[in-house]
Length: 76
Image (cartoon, rainbow, N blue to C red; front, top):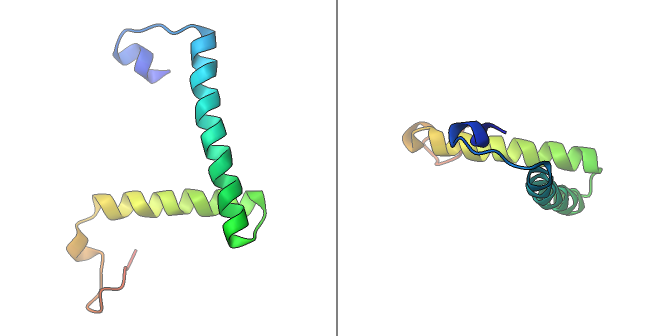
């Protein structure tokens, strides 16, 4: 993992597996929740979740004045 190299840390396989399991469990639950919300397959739920994350990140990084039209509708 990149963090290990940046901080000169070395994690055991068990620690890496534990951290990865936590991330996977959280994101699996989010995919299931999204697929139920939109009544779509898990695959489409994962796509919807990923696109919403990209959109959220883009909104944060772009200057807010450039993100909206004159009616305050989001452009991106």
